[in-house]
Amino acid sequence: MAVRTIDVRERVMARNDELAAAVRRRLSDHRVACFNLVSSPGSGKTTLLERTLEDLGTELRIAIVTGDVQTQNDADRLAAHTNRLVQAVMTGGACHLDARQVQTALDAVDLAATDLLFIENVGNLVCPANWDLGETAKIVLFSVTEGEDKPAKYPKMFQQSRYAVFTKVDLLPHVLFDIERAEAIAREVHDGLTFFRTSAHSGEGLDDWYALLKRQVRDAHTR
Amino acid sequence: MHEMSLALEVCAIAERHVPREQVANIVEVGLEVGDGAGVEADSLEFWLETLLTSPPFKAARPVIARVAGDVLRVSYLEVDDGRPHD
Image (cartoon, rainbow over all chains, first blue to last red; front, side, top):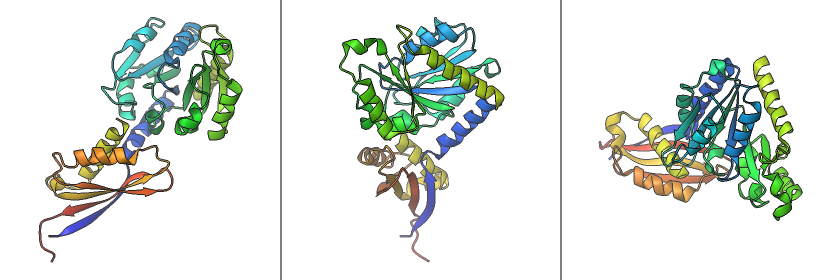
């Protein structure tokens, strides 16, 4: 028997990264800023987006791609707050969105009439960290009803994210969550993180959040 | 589930590196998995053992080398051509 060895040396993520690069080029050609929202389930991604659409939806042309394992409930919720298309991707069991799904979803989005694209990833603090979707930046949401040590438990997600958004801060008086400690733990895994403290319910901290979005849109337009 | 997706990608890479009629002749798939790759190597191995013994593969086995860093790549394939050495 003759066994021969074929030298491969190919990164497992290579194909996804090629597609992500194509998505990034496509968004850049249309001067669209794009954020990939990642978090554990229930941290408030959809609620923050609902409020953002309500408050910024007339000033900025916002498109959304949502990813869920099953149902398009999030897309339906968001569609109630905008006349623009909210594109739902059902991953059918997969625990994250990949660049191919985003590439396909973008075919339905009028990028020429879009300033800002949100990708609401599948709620999961592990897998989405590994998949580049062609976004401008990942934003990790971190609700004050979770444990302060989430960044230590799931470091890669916090390392891969440029911004960390605390959500539900209106609940701080009612929960045993030390936000300063949570921030310190997050800084230990990624010193360069920029933090926002928000409540989509009370509106607290949303001005800073909106200022970031507007700045990113401006940057995308002038690149 | 994450490891299953990665295992499917490993299979796709293996299939791209040999002619279609030789996929069933692959006997070994070598991988490097970094300790910072965010991958559970045991789970990846489990899925690969399943997939690499199902069509179009036949009886390939995964060989995972644990390495430092965040590398995750297919390093080599071994293919049994079924012919004696020249």
